[in-house]
Image 1 (tube, rainbow, N blue to C red):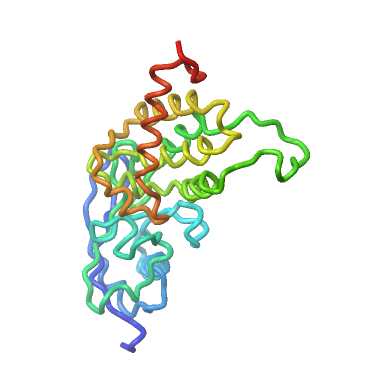
Image 2 (image 1 turned 135 degrees about the vertical axis):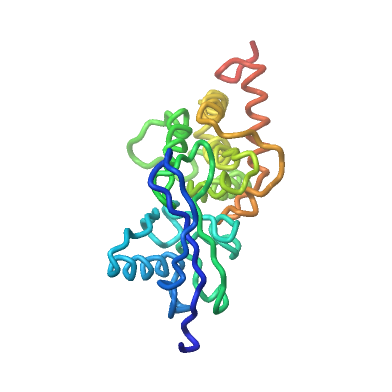
Length: 260
């Protein structure tokens, strides 16, 4: 074994479907001589190639861009969503973060609203339902407006962009003891609600998206802030406070934000 490779004690959760029983399986024999330059998903690729050569069913896991942008990948690695490196997605985590002989347990994001499809892959379509409930603005499209037509304070623009960095991976849900998606929902609300273009449906959007969050079976926020710690984009729980304030306004006013 060279200095650039490590051997791992690898245990992976295997489960055939949402209603099937599952357990950890030992794949240490396939996780030897892993390059420290490989990403975590590339390590799983290597393990799958070796398993396939032995006639075993490969490990199912979700992925797409492998650049920390799409939000498709996600696994709980030794009890931490996306693994031990802060503000890093599973696909961006590299094996140099682990020592030779490290014991690694890999399991899916667990939440009632994220049913397991197979092995490490979960169904996160409940996030789509939240966005579809109100994540849009009714601004007419057409030619580009003049740059100074809608003045936007820099603080608002910056905060909106911070919220818009959410990739919808679901790490916040996996980290939360209540399996709450409050951080995801609040981020999707804030990146529209904090801009002038988003004011027309601001309170209606807030009410509908938070209702969709609750209908999907996600838990409530009790300020553990594990979501913020696990978020690969470092999104602040301050956005949850903003969403709660907007929901209060939406509750005591009409759906369009006017007093009733």
